[in-house]
Image 1: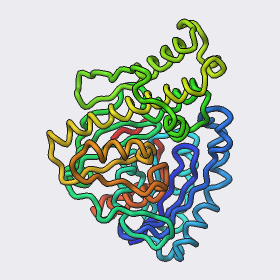
Image 2: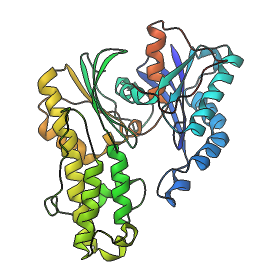
Image 3: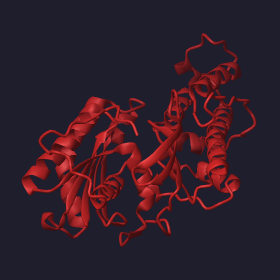
Image 4: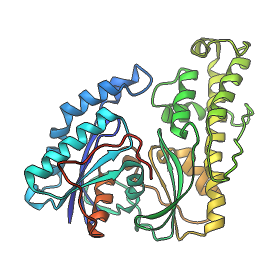
Length: 353
């Protein structure tokens, strides 16, 4: 079965074709990231306009790269949420129209859940991909970490999972973005903070790890505030000093030290929760998913502290992509779940797992 995936939840317009839930035939991404960098984050109106321009060329390119056509597409899977309303609407309306015009089953899927399914892509003839050696086995413990989500989920099987914990405030990727802004580093924050941290000292700034009532829940807003206060103190200012003026008041060495200390504590927060869950639930497989899964420092610390193999998607499949959407869509079809009505499928900006 060949599934066409469509993803448009944020700033990337993506389409992909996946065969039997595991073989990646194509993955095409048109990003509007450059248009948002100057604003330090995604501007919803700009993202939506970019999707309108890019979505059909992206789908056409995905079919061409996969060396297939509509006669050989068995279903369409599309992100219906969570995400930005305008962005989601472009993807869903396009998928609905194509499902009607091409007479294909349509599956609206959860973007966050789909991140997990990037780990089920194990084969491709496309160049420059490093795929997992085998798909995860159940029970599967997955840490989902991105700009909008931080969740720890235990899967007993496909569609049978338990949310162990999640962030109550900022997602870890969002915290990276906000710390980058304090330090005057470019958006997105994950790569830029990671780069600055290479020249910093992880022990130079003492920062807290939040203690939560549910041991598997996360919180990063206090850590972000602690970074701000530390930066103000290092600059010789008090708490009233505006955060946007800190860039000129800190030396490069101070910025690097703050970046290194923050990255270390943020990553250690994630690893601590993952270790607790591994010890308690003894999963057969452990997987990391989402944009922050591309962090070399996170991967390094997990490999040091988790005493069993951990699966990661290829770097290009950590950030938002349509291959993961198609891979989850395949599972819907394989389980013979009823398709969505292409005349009525709606977006859900706050869709939960």
